Amino acid sequence: MRRVVCPGSFDPVTNGHLDIIGRAALLYDEVIVVVGANQAKLGLFTVDERVAMLREAAGGIANVRVGTFRGLLVDYCREQGVSAIVKGLRAVSDFEYEMEMAQMNYRLAGLETLFMTANPQYSFLRASRVKEIATYGGDVSSLVPESVLGRLQDRLASP
Ligand code: PNS
Image (cartoon, rainbow, N blue to C red):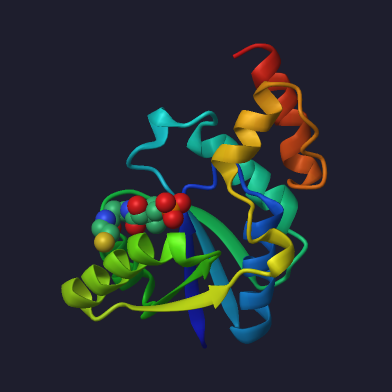
């Protein structure tokens, strides 16, 4: 079985993430979407909330599974028997950060990273910007799935 991991913070999942997840699911037998839990306390949403939003948004894709990991990504991938991860690249600004992690993961455990270029429709989209816009009352309804929209409004109304 060709299985790949799609890791991230997903605080919260955006339509750009979903685009990458959906496209990866067309290429692999199974995509394991995992929320990194090491720094979770720093986020707007808890890890459980992020997982719930991902499950609601991507649960309709039969070969997508959502989970969490703690510690090193290479250790999680080894435990799952996965030898490659998929990440989205929006622009050159992402490249340095992603390249450094990709090369370190390869150095640590031979874990491959496959980059999928963002759909141009979402190349400007990042979770931190969505939170900023929503904080000041901007409309983010075309940027995040339904599962996120309601929770975002609730959280920002009563942080
Ligand atoms: O949303 P992000 O910033 O792309 O997610 C980054 C994440 C969670 C994939 C990355 O920080 C990570 O893999 N963390 C786990 C700790 C780890 O393995 N660090 C070494 C990576 S080279």
